[in-house]
Image (cartoon, rainbow, N blue to C red; front, side, top):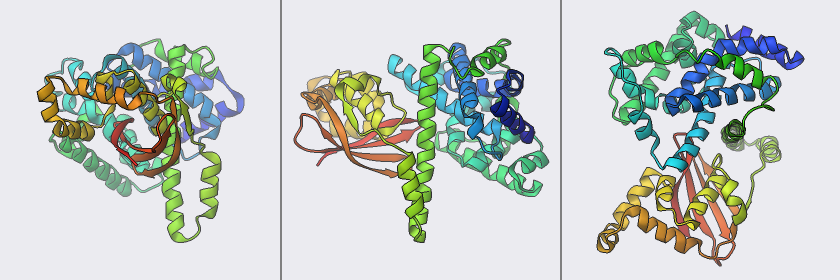
Length: 393
């Protein structure tokens, strides 16, 4: 049960017991590994993500509250780490996530057709659920708890747990339907329950536990990069929640304390010299913009195309269709030309101001080397930031 999980977490936080942490890893390693494999379809990367998730657990053990649903927390952490790994992989391979995953799925068993359609989309769908809905799905279908156990973990009745599970399933069904996967809530529930968790490699639990209990000091460089990226995404997720809470309190007329606390605890980097673009990463909107501008300065059209949101790509195709045909070039080549032209002479930028609206961040920047400010809108899509709009001021 979840209570036992958190008792072990607290005991580990107090005493640093390797045996206690190994118990936690053995309980949840299959769950974490399965989340990573669904997104990455690469056993080596999935093992690295699994290690990263448990290292983060070891580091954050003392800060987790007693009401934390550990399997759900690990699912989100693994999703963030896998998203960062996939982002790095995309930049190296210039592939779209869904196309990549669909092309490399294992051959389905005769009765698993619904799962082959659901699997590539499941973790993005889960990431969009609110915490209580997310926890309900994890407990009911990933952990295979009965409704009484789900209710006890969430602090609600069995009947209320049933309603929450049904509500979450309906949200998942609608998410899949919008992406061309039509099914019923019952079929989705059955597919997730039967296929969502697979056995991790035999030695992974031992390896992950050994690396995690020393807080990742012996982890590989690539694993440490995954941890850094995942922690940034986790911090952004918390920041979004803080912003929403702050706005709610503003409307209630008592915002001062929360807004001050938010400003004191969430520090946003504002200066991005060109020399730092290559290491900026893309775990938050400003850093992702720096990575986009790096691709622009290098004239890398394929990467720039991958940096754009689907809506932005479609906008460019429609706006420059005649120019592309007249010049006999591809959209990527045109964007490369535009990016090189824009970035010519730019030696960095600093953020003048920014606004956050749900999954979008609008950044008003002053490029070093240009007289006018520029406005970029970044949008979070499937766990990563994409350039969604741009205009001169």
